[in-house]
Image (tube, rainbow, N blue to C red; front, side, top):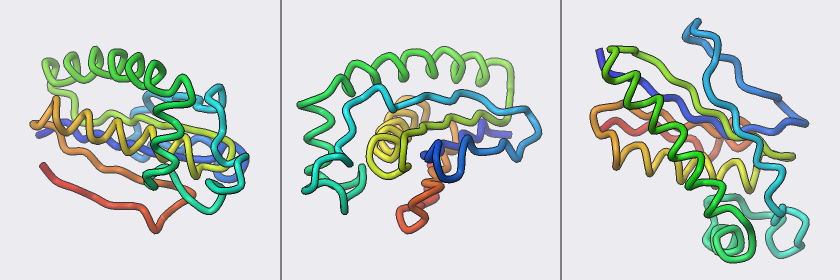
Length: 139
């Protein structure tokens, strides 16, 4: 069986930390609220972390690149270990205030990273507060 990695973006205020339906008791939950919120800037409010202007803001005007590099380093340790041990499930959650900008960006970029680095894993990306952005991609 492949390692199934479920990556969520969520809002601490709306839906809270996603439940782990695998029965394994969860996985990683990263709090993105320490990163400057583009949602507080009028031009970015209607957008999400999938929109290029929001991505450019997060990449150029915040600590997001450093935050994500550290997240990727941490999750890689577990993914390597889980693959070696034959585990079948890992959940990675990213939360922010509204589940629209920072957490969506982090979930998207982490899914991209995991798919590229661990093509043998199956990645499912879920935006809990932004269901219109949800997609499921098989390797």
